[in-house]
Length: 105
Image (cartoon, rainbow, N blue to C red; front, top):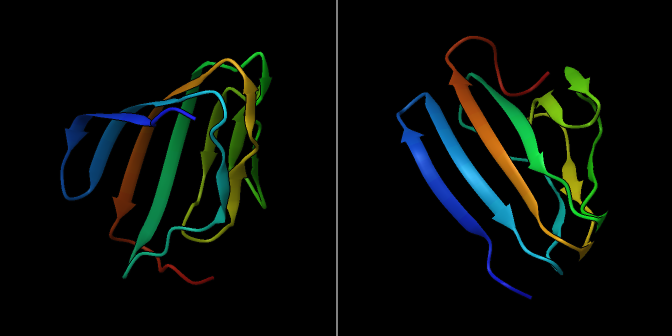
């Protein structure tokens, strides 16, 4: 299994933009991303879908367009990616740590 390549395109206290490449054989275990306060949003654009596997799953999405553009709350809901059996998964991930709201709902 190869290494995940995570290229940071922008990184501020509230906003980050990353180009992430997941290789064949990789998977992401079910987890959530707790934060200390406020609200955490992620908008993922799947630029390259693997030929087989690499399916994103979460307990709840705010918005999904053809499972290629996904807005969700990683702080509130568990999420995972199944094993990439063939190919690679590339995403542009935009994360916003908003000062409003709270992490627990």
